[in-house]
Image 1 (cartoon, one colour):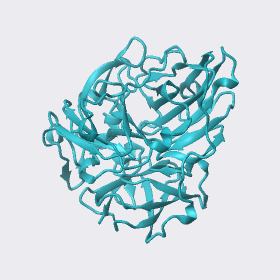
Image 2: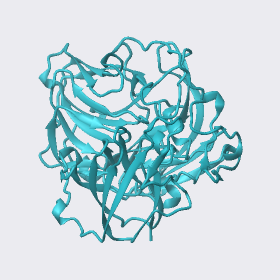
Image 3: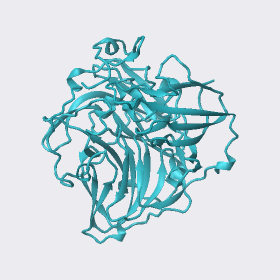
Image 4: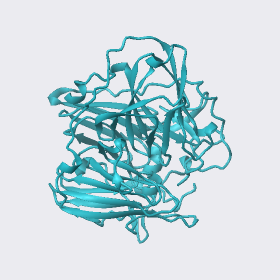
Length: 487
């Protein structure tokens, strides 16, 4: 395996906890699923020859007592990604890509995860407001053969969230191999809107991948240029049949490193209605949607402007990789007409204006960086320090608001920034007010080299210790993570 550290077999897998040395936390990675290869793998099929599969929806085993209860088994299985090839993947209940869990604001969800892998796991509800013991913290792991129940009170508004592995130094590889699922939280505000719904509301999980000569996923730390097969709902450049009417697409970037820049090939309009933390206050029309790893965007596309028989490609215009490798995300095939009672209202929800947000008690500056001098074992840093699970980097007072100004201090390498527990407001990007795509609630923001964002954060949900980190997961696995304590 191409990593920065030696494999330590058994220690973490046996205890379900990290192994701390003078150099920090060391990884334990299975050698049989972590061999990097330089040989080219089997070619991806021609674009648009496989069909976009719907993401499977989990069913609760109980809905009694005012909560929905689920049981999920984390296991390794083989699934078809490239046509005719069985690829080993890590899954929630055998699903690749991961399933959808549908939840409602005000109704609690419990999920009992049973770990049948020979590696520890930690399940993090990304974007969720949950107590520390239910956050899936990097060191709060579930040992092989063990099980754990996570409780999600769902006291926050509508949002397209997601859940993924967070066991430190393994999170990047585990997510890459499949441990990522979608968590759709709805509320009365959203349900009252005449937006496209039912079969016209489609979640799409996007990512990239690299395969060896046998069609198996190749993981190598910080493999920024090698993952050049784009997958939508687990299949390479698929097609999806649509009616000539409006659809809502919930786009989620589950990649470890790839930034997507999405547009329709004909330059057609996309109406963005939501971001990480749910619906925007007002929709806006655009021709491009940009998503760094872990970011989400809800868009509405009106296919009634196309005659039946039209085929429209959703393109990615961002590298690395050539357009023929990474440019074709999926294709919409307009195959029929259909009635369409849906519409996009001018107002979707109410959010306080930026100038009416609570006055900040503290202002902080955060710098993200990593080695970019060509060394073989790059390190990630926040404020010049690698993550130490026992060190508190920031202490905040419960019930207060703060301004966090976050900068990517690198000259070449892009990053992004994610905080656990909270949804924040983006005040400025590069010294100017945030654009419409960042006008709602966010939990992850892009940071290109040298870029700075200013965030308004309120800590009024739970007390305890949480992490913030770069969500290019290979970077957080390299140490680009820190702790904050709400007291």
